[in-house]
Amino acid sequence: MIDSSTPVTLLGSGPQGLDEQRERAVLVGVDRPHADWPLEVSLSELERLVDTAGAKVVATFTQRLAQPNPRTLIGSGKVEQIAAEVRMLGANVVVFDDELSPSQQQNLERAFDKSVKVIDRTALILDIFALHATTKEGRLQVRLAQNQYLLPRLRGMWAHLASNRMGGGVGSRFGEGESQLEVDRRMVRKRITSIRRELEHVKGVRAVQREGRLESGVFKVAIAGYTNAGKSTLLNHLADAGVYSDDKLFATLDSTTRRYVLPDGRAVTLTDTVGFIKKLPTTLVEAFRSTLDEISGADLVLQVVDGSSDEMGRHIEAVEEILDQIGASALPRVLVLNKVDALGETAVEALARRYPHGVCISARTGQGIAELLERVSLAASADEELIEVLVPYDAGEVASRAHRTCRVVSERFEEGGTRLTLFASKEQRYRFTPYLVDGDASASGASDA
Image 1 (cartoon, rainbow, N blue to C red):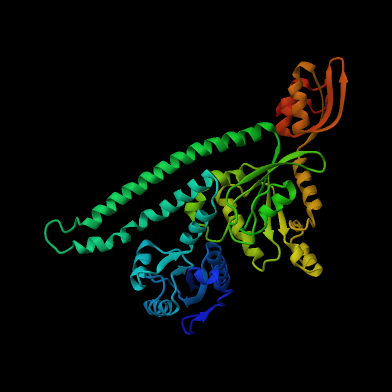
Image 2: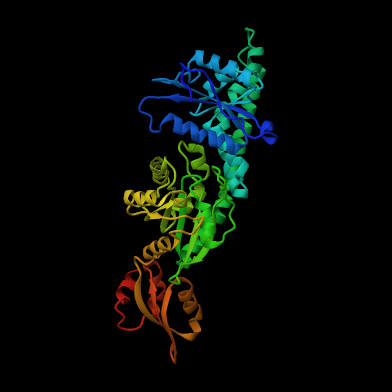
């Protein structure tokens, strides 16, 4: 980490071989007063993003600024210093921790050699999403966000052609570059419209699937949290989902839903969702809206946190901000403090005292999973009521639904049909209203439902 008064700090080159074939990246951050996150923390996360994207960080620069430079974000002298170091180090890419405006990116590109790419955190995250998206929906969502990011930056891409035609005189304001710019803008707008149309179709399919889960009456659990908190590992541990998981940021993007039977016999659905991150681009939040709807449509959110991280508190805040953006902040939530196997016993006890309503677990070893499942069971049974129904034999599907979606306490086969005593949620009770046994105390409540 360096500031404007210190020399560049080189990072370790790592193992030889394949490591030498990776792109060489230089990171740049602006240290502002009263920032929400310490700059060193933000740059450490940026370095992990760069590693996830397949490049190697060779140097890091910072500059303290009260206000960003409107032309180049950082000062002109700092730009010249970084450009010289980039040439000396043979770096291929310069990554800014803050989002660059189109004009800032254009001015910075002019300051570096043509072979050097200048990108910001948003472009880097988009690149990682493009790398890891596997389903059709995921790829469409990434393409939409990429094109939305590209559209306002097209002018700089054709500025060199426009300047070649600006020699003065009539018609000089309508150069070749400007014409090409308009052609490209129309093309990108058409592409955005086309992708949105495809996404609407995919969203419709997802909505039908979600409606099916709603109709089933099964309790829906969404697993959400900061990227690399262990969400996919938790789903794999519980439901043997076979979802790819790795110690990398955004190792998985596509949501996965699995049916799971709790120890008390109740069936629920578990949905793993895309990880969140500080400064998550707004274009990605919009593009992944249909996927994020899996969270807002849940009955319970398991907010998974890396309990071994020094930045756990900030990760919790970042996730809560995004949950608020998508309208899911009011949903019932269980704070899941994961990766406690990386902590000592004393540290785990301190963590439990700090977050008394959380559950300390290790999705890798299974520690604390039983307590977590008990919390899920309590949430799922919060509005349940014990009812008794008599289902005629010619309505066998109703009895089957009771076994699929409710906790059946007892079942007797009588002359008039199947007598069931079961726990049913408010959402489920109305389905059994015609079959309630006379005098059942819950009849009025079921009718109201």
